[in-house]
Amino acid sequence: MPTTSSTPVTETKIIMSDPTALGVFGLSMVTFVAASQKMGWTSGSYCAGAVFLNSYFGRMLLPLGKPFGFIRKGPPAQPAKVVHVIEPAAAASTR
Image 1: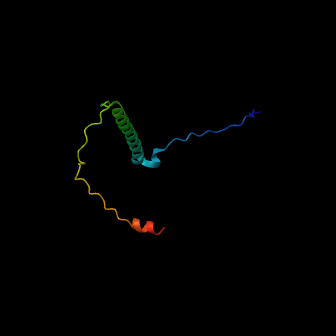
Image 2: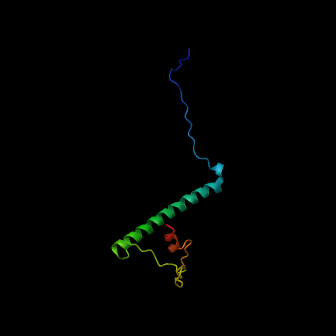
Image 3: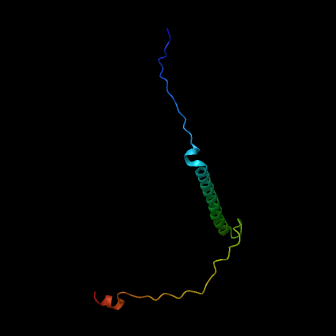
């Protein structure tokens, strides 16, 4: 006579990511996006820290490099003419 166990048996299935659903190209694109996000975060943190520390100490503590120079100052802009829709004197007299 076979003996039966009274403890219930539970089955566990481990599911891992399957690269075939995305394909090799999709998996490489996900990896590329994650790496570029890390690069952007680290360079942004470095630049923000460099601006703060350089201005705080008043000298170059963390170098940022020379600007590219493709943005140049142009001639000063002319001030815009102020146009009132309702004349200030006329608006004050109607009160």
